[in-house]
Image (cartoon, rainbow, N blue to C red):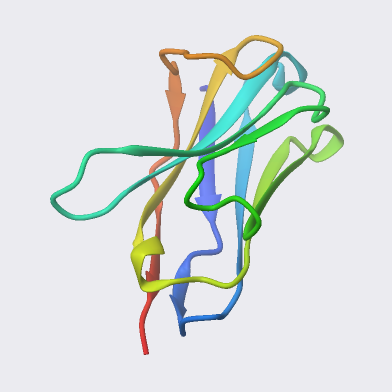
Length: 122
């Protein structure tokens, strides 16, 4: 019954923008750290961003700093990933994941969404 559902993926041109959403249900959202990961074909899963349970602290991979912004609306049980200035190397399946905790740390995430495809191509 603990579910995460990603949405908002699609096909965009280089330099374009996309906003991903991760909708949570079935658990106490306010007590969980939420992270975004991505995986491109033939590559290992990569951590993209993480946000603390209150939304007060965020972390980003060096490859996306200055271009991506993570946020959360605990009243709506939703986390967002705003992606600007997209590059072809951002192409991947994007997943959100949740772990019980307060701030971003190395976690083994217990709950995962099904993923949403992001393709950046001209």
